[in-house]
Image 1 (tube, rainbow, N blue to C red):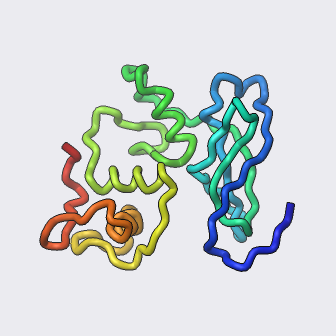
Image 2 (cartoon, rainbow, N blue to C red):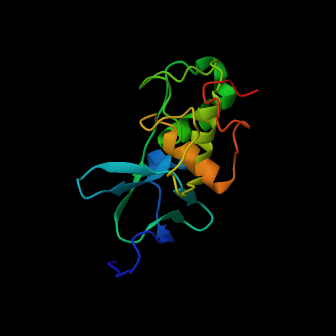
Image 3 (cartoon, one colour):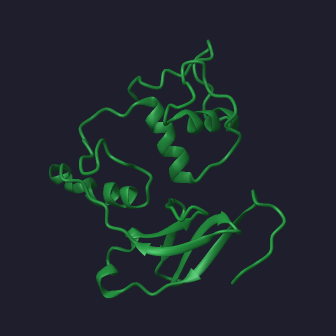
Length: 172
């Protein structure tokens, strides 16, 4: 339903009834929400979740927007030796939380970098905040810049004592 709202920045929780198709049953983690912007570009809303008990898909978004429920099965060709993690990797990929190193390679044996780990946290939890000031060693244009600035502003991380973050160091 169309609704009038005074603040374009206000987030609301939306729940919509949804019945998975036969090919979606057992793979409900791949049920995703997409937002359609004014340019006609679809982007994934990572907070979208299907709840089988209630038959609802819920997500947090801005009220003034167009959303669609989709079934997205993202996979990577190099996760075969990691069956124990396959579902988690594919669901995170389907929800746009992880992208992999290329379109079809996840490189599961690679070390996770500090900046990428924070980016994953920000995406996974759908966190938002002021991203005006990041760390001294993270420049605008870096794909992690806004996420690291948000994490700094929200107090998730303070970085190094000298104001840097060392985003390319491995998580230990």
